[in-house]
Length: 298
Image 1: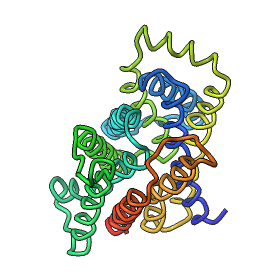
Image 2: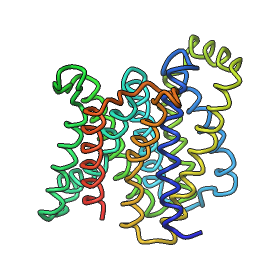
Image 3: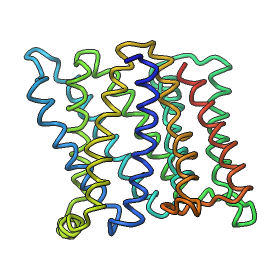
């Protein structure tokens, strides 16, 4: 399969997965912790077979192994924050802000690693941040900005995922991609499991009684997410990393288009705001964040 198709598939699968998560939170699960717990369980289902077929060889530097595990722990924390916010926010607003993480990767590289960014990349960073701020405008509130607690939580989550990328990039110098895949998920499980308590176990049992809810969980967390990551790995192996990364930065476009369609009277699954003014603001803002992100990664 061509690398470009796999990269597009990754972006599409991630976008659909994010919208399924929002649907689960809206309709089938009692709280964010229950979805996070199911995601933790999905990590275990993925860790076991990959750990068996791609074990860590003797002689692999432990610091690199711990770096990859730590990167997964940071991703798990960032994911948890996003799910917490998305439950009470619009998916077409929250996920594009969260997907600004590549600009923080660039900033971390400048501050910690001493990398140099040219004027185009600095402009791309500014464009991305402006897009993230623009998408916070709520036409229902008289066009006011809503840089509330949720916005800053999403930015913090994006920074955690950015740190995850930097750590994993260093760790993967001595660990191959398939080993890194299960090591990262092991790290993610450690932080995701922190949400599991006695109440969560009860909610997990209750959610088992919903056939549609369980179908969506299996499709999204056990199916699409895994296929998306494998598609990204395949694309990176076959194609140029810069172009693959550019295409991989487009999930917000899928979320915007599909989320809007799923909020119409013909397909009333979600409840996103879809008046003309809001759609125009979201469309411009998402274009800014996606173009800016692409400008940073290529």
